[in-house]
Image (cartoon, rainbow over all chains, first blue to last red):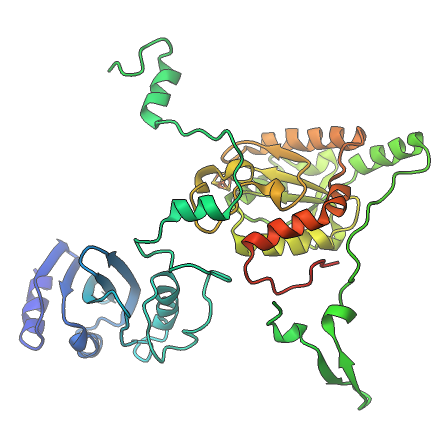
Length: 182
Length: 215
Ligand code: SF4
């Protein structure tokens, strides 16, 4: 209920997309990248969303886009609002919000390393974050083949087998029964 | 490739005002690769040494993966590994048993190699958990090694994900047997095949910014 009212108030000011009402205390809304800063400042200063919970990305490979999710928290009313921004996947760049919340700089460094999304001007954005000496495309991009990379980069011990958990457990618990039998 | 400023050759001004040159790689590290440590002059003495070594296991308290959690109950009254003559030490210089407790990311591997090389001979390595054996559940990870003995000489593996403290206690006893039998020759293996180990290590650690031997 409260989320709908908030959405109505915001909608009057900014060109917002649909509201996804996840739970009583959690909702998501999509908006154009150009309006992100204004919306965030408005939410922080006027609506009590004073805390940045997280900033993360989703790789929509087929659509050629990255989705950035800025999850904001209103402590007073104990509710979260997620702002979703879609940006182009090639030469992915986004304006940083580290001046609004300094903690965002850490998320931005992570996104740059793991997804290859640049945030020009963000503190220490050029530095390695978790990886050391990474020499491939950013590993969280969906076109990065994790298994292939692991097979090529790291020595394996032969003889490793993978069991289908369901079949394996049935054989363990009911030995003698045909594995396919229900 | 040396990029770290603290490893660069530079001029330093001493407290007495004298300027002198410091080349950290030459001045702070030993350039000579490790050497094989020969056994005692007569077998019975070596056997005695090995018996003594088996009674003196000092573990480096360095937890690399989730398996490290199982070492905590061993240090406390519930499982109390100290009654088996096993104790944990805070620095590599004071330890002779390195337990690689689970998965190793390449980043941690680098630190593990440094720590291992700083330990004094004779020294032993135990691989704890599936991850050290064949990658465990991190077998398809972009950032973890899957076969510990490619990079460090392993004397003993303890299987499980994660192995219970009892398994570790059994492992310690097994380790003592291996040492008493004179088969815990990991440090010598490492010295003998130093080039092979280094090549393997450098294949996965792309930003090698440390000396080749960290003694
Ligand atoms: S073997 Fe299991 S418990 Fe041990 S480090 Fe790997 S995932 Fe963790």
